[in-house]
Length: 111
Length: 114
Image (cartoon, rainbow over the protein chains, first blue to last red):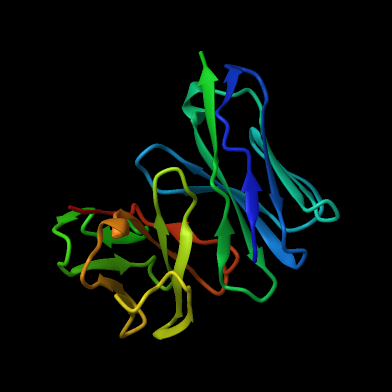
């Protein structure tokens, strides 16, 4: 059973702070890891993906992957009220066409 | 707009009726996925097509659900004899061999069964 776990939150941070979102996964064979943002009533939109251990930065967003600990995180620097959304972690296994999603973490950035 | 397109965006139907959703993937994307999402949950995988071939189906896809992609372009998801538990957002996503590790979602089709 492939599982992706996220803290459902809600997580609240003040504007300008760093928001830290975490995700763990159960399948050690997982190869690709994704973060999606979902506004209420909308569909998920891709923020970034990461394949290799370490950090990957894209603007205000940094994804961190630790395969040994089966842990993925997303850091949002200089958080803005427009970042308020649910953040979904997704994992794709080796040779699999299925993307497994966590239940999402709700983030609120307080002006 | 060259993104994934889904129709209808909203559908209200009576229990027992059949409904069909259509998905037009990003042009030239050969991979197409259907997901279902209920409130407070992440998207759940339903089925996957590569070109016109349906290669994977979830256990969630009961015999009341059928999906097709006849010409390897658009896809339809039909739900027969709808039940209240079918109420959800049905998401279509697509990817290509080049972006195979990244899927892009459409805006979703909301189904309410009353």
